[in-house]
View 1 (cartoon, rainbow, N blue to C red):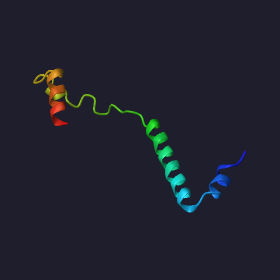
View 2: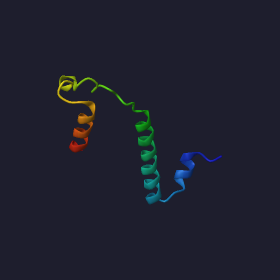
View 3: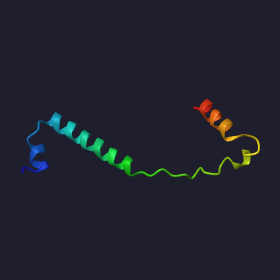
View 4: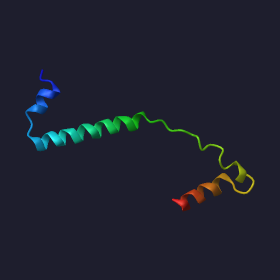
Length: 65
């Protein structure tokens, strides 16, 4: 089986660049999958719990978007 390097060596320069860009795209895609969602914002609105209901805050968040 041919190695990746051997296959790349056979490509013309413009397609080598395209292959390079595609590999960067794939690596970026993998990195994004590995990033975990953090909840470091949790509790930041507790000062408003007596002023607004959760539904009111959801509506306000939609307005801000």
